[in-house]
Image (tube, rainbow, N blue to C red; front, side, top):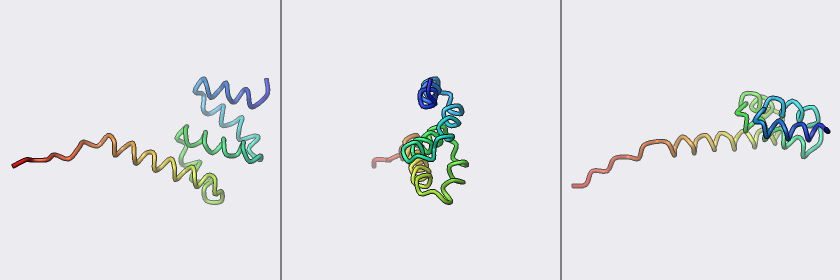
Length: 86
């Protein structure tokens, strides 16, 4: 089984650490690099993504997207403001 098939299988098992390790070993290629950044974000490994974001525009974009998603999720779970009708 090729590395990318192993990574897909790990991702389907929700074994993010294995998927990330397999993809990161081959992340020198553009599409694999983007997938690596996406896996880090989906695994909520934001500190690692933030470290990479210091020098990598793709990591920075994925980190910003992950932060926006978290903010939107938090806003959706906030109770609605109470409105008093007179």
